[in-house]
Image (cartoon, rainbow, N blue to C red; front, side):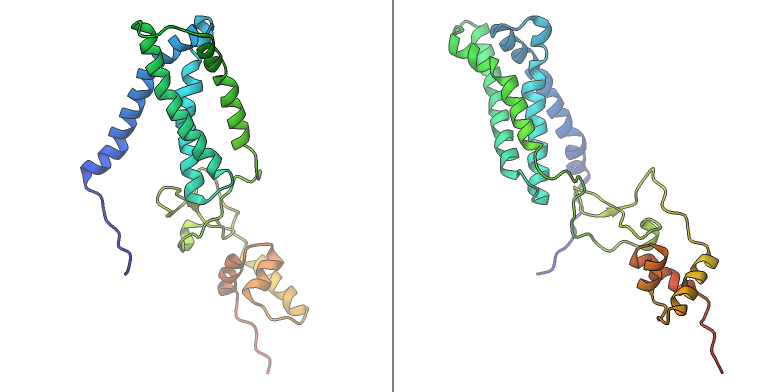
Length: 229
């Protein structure tokens, strides 16, 4: 069964690009008062209590994004990011419930509640440090589609890969290496011939310190090798 591309209707695209982000922003804003109140109940001054939404709602959103990226590209720490995202979302939900119950008088504060709320910043820092462990490389190697030559860098490197669609797109804001002058390519070919070797794309690439793809491209631009006799 072959795969087919389906173009989403305009309203689906609008929901994804506008509706979902708007609802997400509204949910974060509505969560702010309850989380600040909960922090004040735990003993923080009003100034510091305003940071609690960052520790709860914003952290929950960040952990969810990390979990999604880890799942898509099978990165290290995938399970930790998913667990953290779920716990952070649960924490954000219960923070609102507890705050409203306290404000409406359905429950009172307790030593256990104060201890749990006070531990939130430390738990957030601990999990962020845990998710930050692992390889220092930030590039992700994925199987990318073929990219036309005019979409790659001059040195033959692939264009950037869109993490959502998996399609290649040109790099922006960065210039590729300058084009090698024909006389320099010709001189490199003469050096290869002088060694008694055949001038090939890989040989040119090694001599010019370029990628194999660039070497093959410059091979096509070479002047024909003079015939003897």
